[in-house]
Length: 171
Image (cartoon, rainbow, N blue to C red; front, side, top):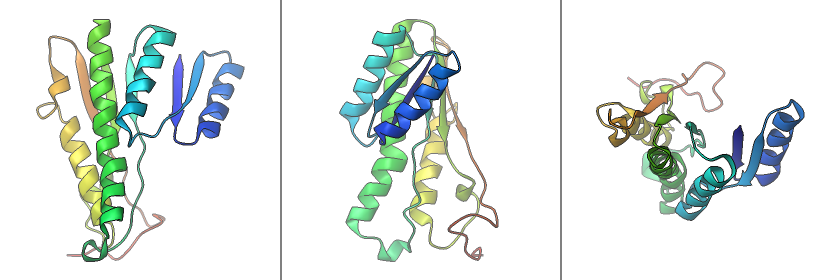
């Protein structure tokens, strides 16, 4: 079974319908990951519908381009809320659901190759994604307890020449 959650409820519903049409079980929910309450509700409804959580993927994120010295508080708050706090909320509630189920599980958090490639104008994105990588590291993650077999891992994609905010690398 797959739970499709997105701030765009119609997009989540469309994806869930495609899964159902292919013979799978699915549930669609609108969820703003910057809201702790939305994420809590997401995991509560998932457990109520399917009985447990085996895998959780925290993939929401956005670029928030601009030079660090020019970013407003609103942009900083939005970037940190979406790219970092949303992942933290998803990780927290996934751990709780997996532990409550007594079977553990896997948490996949999307980081970025931007944490290793210093490109001008994506500092906010890069440092929030670096924090996601640290959260997800086995030694740094409280979810990596051998007692419950719950692990968190980070995956990262690299910037490429087709990257929409590509700039000349800084030295």
